[in-house]
Structures are given as structure tokens and as C-alpha cells.
Length: 70
Image (cartoon, rainbow, N blue to C red; front, side, top):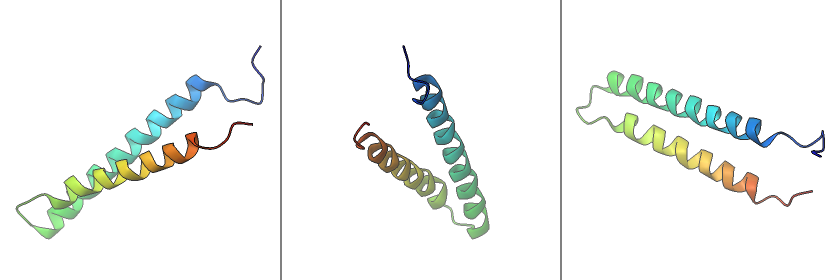
């Protein structure tokens, strides 16, 4: 039987997927807004901001899974 204090794995991963989706969406929208304000021909921010967001989220994921289980 599952301990009631342990989070349900399905909900944990669904929350993680939702967090990634929202973070990437915000990064793309912010990159699009910044690129429209700068007027550059190359979309620098719309490329770099989602990559930075993915890097940060992968770092958080590795940090979360490297914690010792109790």
C-alpha cells in the first residue's frame, strides 16, 4: 500500500510537465516581445530565452532527483 505522505508519481510528473510548458511559453513570449522591441533581423531573444529556460529546468530536475530518498 502507498504511504499517504508520499506524493503520487503521476501528479508529480504532470505538475512537472505543466511547469515546463508554462516556463517555455513565457520564455518564447518574452523573447518575441524583446525581439519586436529591438527591431533586429535575427530573432536572438526568441532563440536564447527558451534555451536558458530549458537549461534552468533541467538543472532543477537533476537537483531534485539527486536528493537522497527518505
